[in-house]
Length: 140
Image (tube, rainbow, N blue to C red; front, side, top):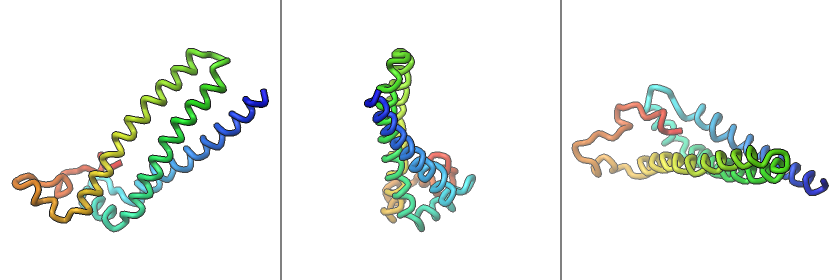
């Protein structure tokens, strides 16, 4: 029982990490940088606050990693109650983490657009999405 209490305590700390980093990366950063229905203004905000954008990305990485650890710790606590459901929880959580990391790749693409002022010359005859199309949904 003492090991369960220790595991529960560790899971609680990891849960707190997930909540804090999740709030920062999924609520605070987008609220400061993203302007719905205006991709150009969103791009301008990200260009002006690149450090905040990068901190949001780091926070995402920490959040997703901690979420993966949390699922494994909760499995240790819950498999004695119902092994089938505990296993389903782990599988669903572990499947979501790589998907989230793949989605994070879109944010790296935005950093490429910011850091390469000659990006338009790489795609002659094709307008960059930020020039007029709404990509604000795909940013976060």
